[in-house]
Image (cartoon, rainbow, N blue to C red):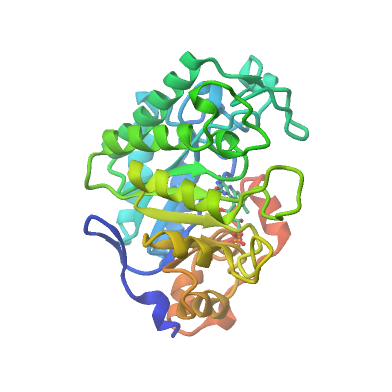
Length: 349
Ligand SMILES: Cc1cc2nc3c(=O)[nH]c(=O)nc-3n(C[C@H](O)[C@H](O)[C@H](O)COP(=O)(O)O)c2cc1C
């Protein structure tokens, strides 16, 4: 059943996932206090791979201590983290799924109590309930680019099949792209400069043959909004700059809105992306049923789907869909997300 989801998904450079159902990145706060992988996390990934997903994007993983976003979230900030990731990779490979991390820096989306110092960002910025961030110095920016590259190198040392950059959801990479946040007057004030520099450095670190995914989201797309919204032109510029720097696959984060028009039109975001780039599109956003996911790919809006909440609730979502047993899929319930915080895996059989 849903045969179109169960054809191979070629990412790039001859690396192919066995199907088009990807487990999207999910931060679960089940790491040690220092951000090292625990047996719980390895088991969490092992179950989803055994449950039939074609690839797993590991949760947002901080590349530097000053990029931490949450307590007990995973890291890859020095070599002591590598072995844990190797176990995750092996757990995925045991069932034939690809595995790669989502390299992350929280920037302003953090707290002094977690970092031990003021959060950093492209410019001074206070995001919601997070602490006031200060602008990074040029030297800190160069160091952070190196931190992303080092995180990517460690990922490859751990055996990962691909690497994703977390450029979405108003974390550091996005804080440089957002015209309402980045007010710098140096070369990093050019909105694509930092995302492109990180992408280029990561590409150099992983070499030419490892697929590089980039997750992005659009903070605002209403042409009449006052917050310097993204426009079709600025999206095109962004995609072209990152593609030139080495991105192979777009991971387009639509939150729960993968089926709405952007930029005041009725054209969905992945279709805007396809106007400017030929790269494969992995799309995230409210794919809770096999019907919905299969239809999205069948109608040409994505080459693959990234599922998050559906896989919290049922680790076997993909294999149940494949055998046409969608009635047996445990539907997502917000209580399942909460259960994780108590150490329960709600998706286990
Ligand atoms: C518990 C949880 C943790 C998440 N953590 C991340 C994350 O670390 N990185 C990220 O890019 N998105 C994260 N997301 C967003 C998801 O990857 C996904 O884009 C979003 O939930 C929409 O997909 P869904 O409708 O399938 O849940 C998280 C979502 C959930 C539910």
